[in-house]
Length: 280
Image (cartoon, rainbow, N blue to C red; front, top):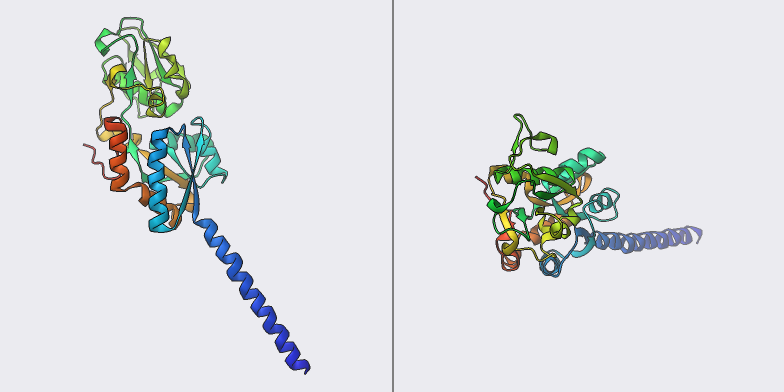
């Protein structure tokens, strides 16, 4: 009887253990099926695009996507590095590389989204040739976007760089400035608002769209070529999670014809889908 009792007790323990494994193991699996993506300054248009991503991710891959909106560029990478979110989607490759270098980060791109040709806007002038001498031009003050803005001014013929200037240009790299332009460094989120006080401003799409800046205010648009690779926006994960299947599903859900059509319908030529983009 004692032997039977012992065997019965062991059997009960095994049943409980197996039940616990499947119960908690299943919950753990379900938890991995929810992915939180950080974005910056989400607009109604952005929300429509992410709603399409959510729909595809849920229906095709069984993944629930949640979107968390941040107010500026300084927050989403820190949140991702610290594990507060699973992915983020707001930055181009150059910004990511600069952030990793400055913060000893371990964040990596896992999929391309769009490239948004950056523009020089003005409320005062209709084309770039009207810019007067001693004009003031606002540019973003973070390293990668300031460099991009300076290259826009260079490509527009407004400034030239010293020989040997690399991809990450600074104001100190300017060699010639024939119009004696004043380059005003501002937080990226302030550049659009500064247009009432400066002659022109280089504004990222993240802030140009909600400020309703468009073709009417554009006096120069950045060309897309082989040098534009670093400006492609990406979905980013922590390096240790780069092969996570749920995260890959989010990328696949973004890189669809449905999202491509929606982006083109919403943004026209101001954003170009980049997962099949060939730069020459």
